[in-house]
Length: 185
Image 1 (cartoon, rainbow, N blue to C red):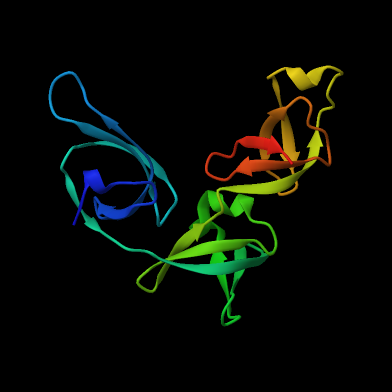
Image 2 (cartoon, rainbow, N blue to C red):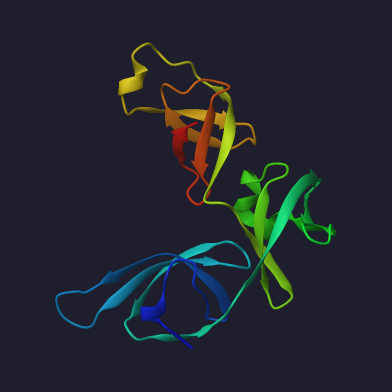
């Protein structure tokens, strides 16, 4: 069993007959009453997010996920093909099972495959990825000092907000958890 005091980013536990992973948490002590824990959770099976508040001391069934390195190879229809780096076995995973993580995959990217016992649950991406800007509106002289943003389409088709100084063919770093621009590389 795991207590709310043991929560940290990445903790995996069972809650309401589903497997969740802690994405973000914050301890909160209101003026009266006991301490509470605000938590943002990701459903490991379907990738959806929920936010909950737990009372201090609540207990949950602790689960341990096995993480194995896998390499993303290519997309074939709605299937994403991966390879085991040790045995070179290939396997396909449906787009629905990958959820939002699918949009950040690039060829030959190394990811962590998550397994609960022998059941494949999904993948864990690196915290950020580096992608090339495919198209964006042109900037204007003097744009380097403002904090205004403009839309940009990246090489994998996702659209992010970037600063005005970013041009086409620039390489940018994007946070895979939030989908936000981090920096120009």
